Image (cartoon, rainbow, N blue to C red; front, side, top):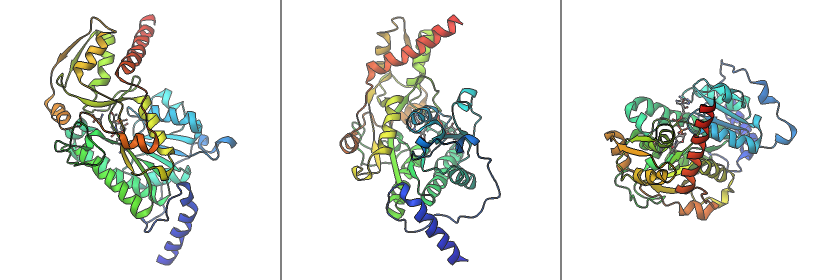
Length: 373
Ligand SMILES: NC(=O)C1=CN([C@@H]2O[C@H](COP(=O)(O)OP(=O)(O)OC[C@H]3O[C@@H](n4cnc5c(N)ncnc54)[C@H](O)[C@@H]3O)[C@@H](O)[C@H]2O)C=CC1
Ligand SMILES: CC(=O)[C@H](N)C(=O)O
């Protein structure tokens, strides 16, 4: 039986490997047993048009959070609607459900994940499921399960099926003993949150699978991401999203970080573009598998100053949350992303003034529509 199993593994690997163009792997990750559970495949998934046939087949885990829906829409424009499957453990809102393939996927259920990858011939996986920094501190055991055990499942499925795998890391993968201004790619990483610890683990495991098995693992350390049409999921940088909503709606905002707390930030359009660019970069251009990416860096006071230029009556007050403040005080103030710029040509489009104009325009037009209705 072990001989049959080994042959099956070798054959399936020969068929799967070309998708990423990596070295042949050395050892299998997990036993490929049969699963009693069948997920009915959505008819949409099989209706790939001729022109879409040689595009990557993408799965996004944890896709209903702040970033996943935007990523799906961005990738669908590039690869075709039916080639990008959004997944999560939550029920999608109607507009998301109607916008393209959606499937239930719990990353803690290894067989379920494997079945989705196999049934839909997935070739690229964007692993977005996670508990963020503040939520993670409030529920350490769940954060450990989702961010660490879940990652192990994803790594094994990706390795077994020859996927190209993107896992986002974060400025939170650094800690108080890291150089903070600026923080380079390679330096001391001793984070003090379960979120940060799990992300350092993800970076190291992904790189280990790359060197050991040839897994095409790619990882960006995102700064705080600012988006207009999606809510943040419980992080330390959330204030920089909420402030725009409150400025337009109420003309005031209560900030849970001190006015002088400087953190690296990025507008979502830059974040999604960076993610696709690193996934499409030729393997030989990547001197590393985990890169810092950055756009801007500001404090709540500086952000409020910029908003005041557009909303003269805007007022900011401070009611500091000690948990979030302690986390922010241990994170980078400025992020050195020179390796990403050098290796695969990373360049951001949005600085603070463009960010503020774009965010206020979005919320302004939303509130005008609401008033008109
Ligand atoms: N939003 C940001 O500012 C930043 C995000 N990142 C990373 O980007 C990724 C996406 O971030 P967001 O969209 O902001 O996160 P989010 O917290 O908004 O969404 C995470 C999603 O994971 C899902 N999830 C939780 N448990 C799951 C499970 N067992 N199986 C499947 N899905 C599960 C949740 O339902 C949620 O929809 C995360 O890995 C995060 O660490 C990194 C740095 C900055
Ligand atoms: C920067 C992040 O990783 C996230 N937004 C958080 O604040 O936890």
